[in-house]
Image 1: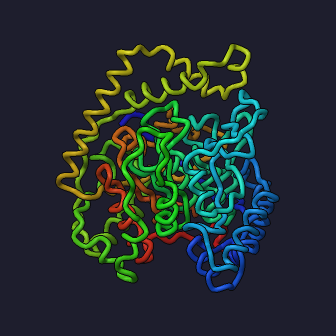
Image 2: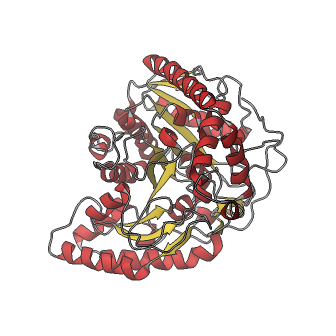
Image 3: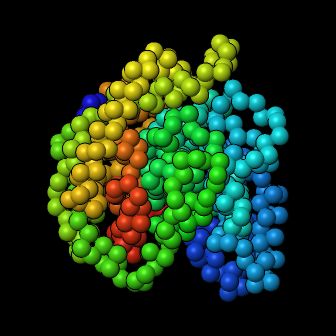
Length: 493
């Protein structure tokens, strides 16, 4: 890989956002639903608790761009009436959910972290995932931060400022779904939906100590289609795999606006609960390749390497067949850059010179690079992508699951695209384990597996062949069920 780290970026932990994850704001979606069914509390109680939590943490981490308390409480009251009548609607009736500000959500603007988008207009359409949330009775509490147009692996933008890490406010939450990750980690709604074009669900989930899934491309429909094309996925960000399965069962619902959507997905929640209380049954006999560094191509911090190795060992203890083996991955960053930078150029193509001056300077740089590529350059990158997909397809004939670090480092200083002193030029330098699997469109999840010397979360990545989303989710759930995926919440509350 290119851009090897030149330092391990370890420093004493700075102040963390106050948490505790107590009360209703600390419950998972499944626990909330069980409480509604028993009558222990109502969706209104849960919505109020989450809104109070948002009010407390927003000044510290800046995870939200818009919170509509009035609309959220109205949705919660409607849900409470349905629960009182014993007629809940869908799988998430009354559960608070946040939505990354790249998804359309009717009733308010989707500004994508950019000063070039006018908030005026009707804003009367939901993205497919948001529409499915409404159909299932979810309570939409707010839109979360993103870098401008989701272009990089950290979350700061000219419009909305910097989003910070709940474990250390001096550090980044990661990106581009950094607001969603920080919100979930801090109890500001148990569920969020993010997008992932090169790691944008997995990067912040790893940095913030939560679960994140990039499903197989097309599993969750997208509309409008992403300018980054078929690199872009949408997926759940939650506190554990079981909640993510529930959310995935909802947002993978059909939507004819996305012509590239896959056939109806299997019921993921049912696949996880087939053997309740038996984590080993979820992975017994699964063939696992553990690749700590892509065959020495990536320099991984020792604390990260040790935590991910323990994850692989736990899968073996649960009954999986685990051996150290590396996929045939050579550095694909130039092919990824060609596709990604071209997409960025397409995003801003309609903008005039005056509007372009309002863009994030780093985004302007990659746009300029994208505008220099030819159609033949783009097609050569597509060829490289297809070859990588072929090699990974062959790899998964021998191994069901691949385990790697999600990232080779832990969270670094906020407001920077790359760690200070790292020698990296772009965010892809420190994300060598994530973007290859956007090129290949495979399902990939990050599971928290420990903390480093500064108390910052570490993630282990689980990858399977295309369409094997259920296998990834079963392995992740096994790690949670066995206690291997537990990290202390921010400030240890």
